[in-house]
Amino acid sequence: MTFLNKIVLVTGAGSGIGEAISINFAKLSARLYLIDKNGDGLKKTAEVCEKLSRTKVFTAVADLADDDLVEKVINNAKKEFGRIDVVVNCIGICKRTTILDPNIIQVYDEVMKNNLRSIVRITNCVAPILIESQGCLVNISSVSAVLTSKELIVYCTSKAALNHFSKCVALELAPKGVRVNCILSGPVATNILINAGSSKEDSDAAWKGAKELAPLKQLVKADEVAELAAFLASDKAKGVTGSIYSVDSGYGLIGCQDIRN
Ligand SMILES: NC(=O)c1ccc[n+]([C@@H]2O[C@H](COP(=O)([O-])OP(=O)(O)OC[C@H]3O[C@@H](n4cnc5c(N)ncnc54)[C@H](O)[C@@H]3O)[C@@H](O)[C@H]2O)c1
Image 1: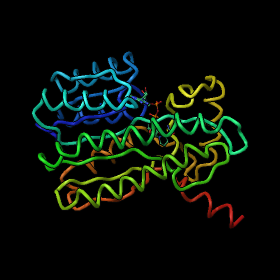
Image 2 (image 1 turned 60 degrees about the horizontal axis):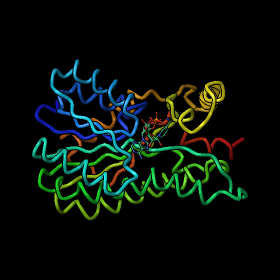
Image 3 (image 1 turned 90 degrees about the horizontal axis):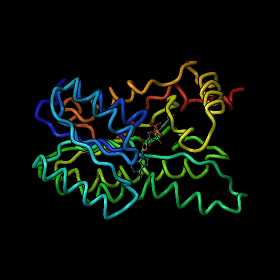
């Protein structure tokens, strides 16, 4: 598989899954435009990618929850490369709350702004460019979209909405030659919990618990998500749109297991 001469834009490239996805596309010879609000993380990812692809990697430090910045960053990418072939959306945050939390609306607004609204705006800005290139979109969702959780009520809801949003966009853009797919990732030991305010200790304990709970008794590796994203963005998947693919160490099966027990 090669992405030689393809322009790939990755959001949330400065950490975790987005970092792994960017590095994998660099290995596959893509020309990269990487975006994140975390400048330090973004710089590190770009340096690794440049070494691997031996081509300049373009970066933009931007908070993609800002509508105007999204438009600016997408326009810059188009200006720089003349086209965009693939967009992979990895931005996302995780915040805990429950329906009895008096502050749930604040958490709701913050999570939806970062996990859904931003991607609606990105898609809105990039769709005409992808129609020109006959390109594709891959959105990184979560197995939380199909599981239920008391404390992750808002996160789960944002990811369920992202799944359905992706399918609706896939339907609209299919006749125009643009494919849109979603990946439901299971737990990957990234900085997402620390970025949400957890201590390193609590974050490590959460990943340990997740590993024990996983039917395959292993966490998902960011590289596994990256491989699937590359497949969905490649010509090998040219008949695939509106699909939701899981790479979750069997997490999506947990509900059935509970009922049996
Ligand atoms: N880690 C997991 O277990 C897991 C599981 C399922 C799905 N996911 C999803 O995968 C995606 C990546 O998660 P991760 O675990 O790599 O998290 P992470 O926190 O390590 O990385 C997310 C990156 O996105 C960036 N980001 C977040 N909001 C942004 C915004 N508004 N503008 C610009 N950049 C922004 C952050 O700065 C960070 O660098 C998220 O959408 C997450 O919901 C993660």
